[in-house]
Image 1 (cartoon, rainbow, N blue to C red):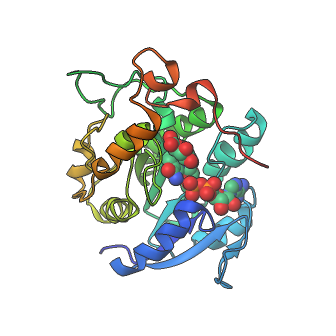
Image 2: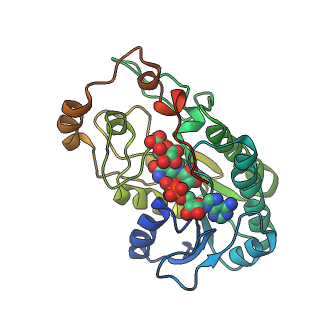
Length: 268
Ligand code: NAI
Ligand code: 15L
């Protein structure tokens, strides 16, 4: 049967807030989890991913998990290790122990951030391109994808790893024209990832059907995802303000963009 009760970790964050608004329309009942209180949601579970007991209780009885919680920018290796690497392991262990069958894992384009962006007529980047993390943050997403593969092979726990581009209400940079995922397409993709059958461990890129797309959405579409948005209406204004991407500038020449040269740092 299609999943109905879904644990949303990272519910207080940017993407979590967007998905709290959009996913209930698909019929999901969301259980919320975050380190920080979720505004207006007194029933949300306020706990750290290091709290194994809280996690075990949080996953008990849910049909699936969307795992967004963690450090979403660059940080020290020690902080990334605790929140993203050990935290994701703790979540998978809790899910295994409680018999949860599927996780949708928020991976990131930064797991492959050092991959050169396609220029000219070069082919789109496939999901099986070698992983080339651009930060400790990207390294933790690469680990998460391996963890997901291992829990499928060893324990039959399914995952869709979504290498999200940039999911914000609007694209705000020229790079984002290529990797933007509209919030509505994000909800469509998460819904497809929750409901497609026999996913094993599937890796997909998460973006809209952008005219300037850099990567291949074939595996995402195979889940039943049909993106409806395209960043192109924002292109003229953003390019007028910021200029075209330069072919030789390292911050413009890789999928990871400025994460390659000057990554934004997690504030705490
Ligand atoms: P965000 O930083 O706004 O939200 C992350 C949430 O996780 C925060 O509410 C934070 O309190 C919570 N959190 C952090 N450490 C935690 C811990 N140890 N235990 C429990 N909760 C913890 O990030 P955003 O943008 O909402 O991203 C959500 C997820 O999607 C992240 O995993 C991020 O890496 C991934 N992602 C997001 C992209 C985007 O465009 N928004 C792009 C690529 C990946
Ligand atoms: C990410 O992985 C970050 O979590 C998000 O905040 C954006 O910066 C995004 O990548 C990006 O590459 O733009």
